[in-house]
Length: 149
Image 1 (cartoon, rainbow, N blue to C red):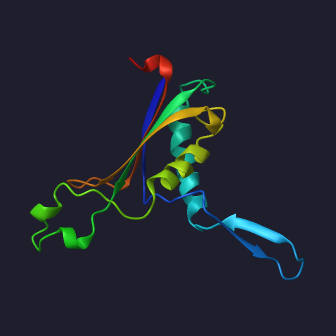
Image 2 (image 1 turned 120 degrees about the vertical axis):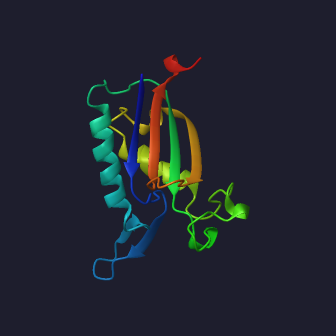
């Protein structure tokens, strides 16, 4: 089985947490470090649900491939809109961390595409810059090992 879909938007990370003490109750509260994580994961879940509608829930080991497309920084462009030659093959080797971006994808698709994210046994994560009017977002592919040659 193979499911592939694109989720447009500025990808957000998951995994980092922050903890603080509630002064009135004295209890420790743990919250996501990224406040925009919930909206991004809701979008991921929405597009995953649409893509997986005609497929059964994956219950066997699978491979998750995520290609994150990021907007280029403004300094990569000439005034005429062309990418400067020294940046043509540049990769987004800056924050956010690819592994944390993928973690948000993996968590959001649990119980939608696969029964549990523990079924993901191989990850293929890439970060690229958008090219030629391409929208930022993530291209997600989930496939079972039976599809591998």
